[in-house]
Amino acid sequence: MALSGVPVVGFFIAAILTSLPESRAIKEDHVIIQAEFYMSPDPSGEFMFDFDGDEIFHVNLEKKETVWRLKEFGQFASFEAQGALANIAVDKANLEIMIKRSNHTPNTNAPPEVTVLPYSPVELGEPNVLICFVDKFSPPVINVTWLQNGKPVTTGVSETVFLPRKDNLFRKFHYLPFLPSTEDVYDCKVEHWGLDEPLLKHWEFEAPTPLPETTENVVCALGLVVGLVGIISGTIFIIKGMRKGNTVERPGPL
Image 1 (cartoon, helix red, strand yellow):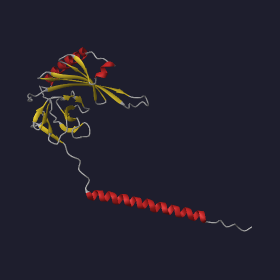
Image 2 (image 1 turned 60 degrees about the vertical axis):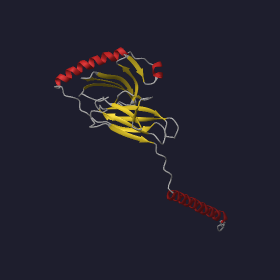
Image 3 (image 1 turned 45 degrees about the vertical axis):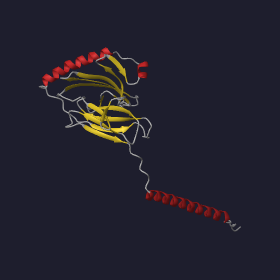
Image 4 (image 1 turned 135 degrees about the vertical axis):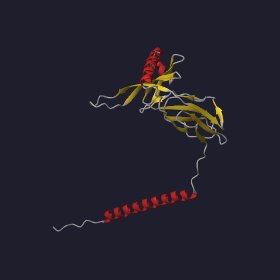
């Protein structure tokens, strides 16, 4: 899907700080963030709650339902999706006013930083997950494609919603389950208005580099030196102890 158009974005972020009342100064231990945005001219938006940088839930604006990041969360709490829809409607109205007042000034494009890494230490033949972390970008419009040996992969892929940052930029995670192999290579292809061309981040299995023989010799030599130092130190303490034990205290004059 190619990206087109120049968006204007309206943001609303409310933070709730939770801390222990140790002093008058506010020291935040945990932060719950309610973040929402609406974009134009291509109408789209998002409403979500965030706890210490992790999503709690978001509202699917098309299906008009609350989607919990973990299903277990929904067993202990609830959120009415209609409340989010009402907020988005207000955001849309406010954005239209802001567009007129700013003489239709578009949003500034901030290009993303992309990192690809495995979820856990890689072992050949053991199932794992590749993570494509897209960070520090704006507006929240992005297209991410997984490539295996140069061909698009869609089976099993998943992603998070747009997660807010303190600097009003965004971050997003994309996941790809895979079976590590020496024959397969992977790329995370990212398209964004802040990029002149699609950005590809490459990943492939790299066998652990064996320890060079010279390094092994150095390690053995150091171990030998440490062992000799310990033996010498122990011998000195033993000799000193024996001398003290053999010392006879002479009686003083009467």
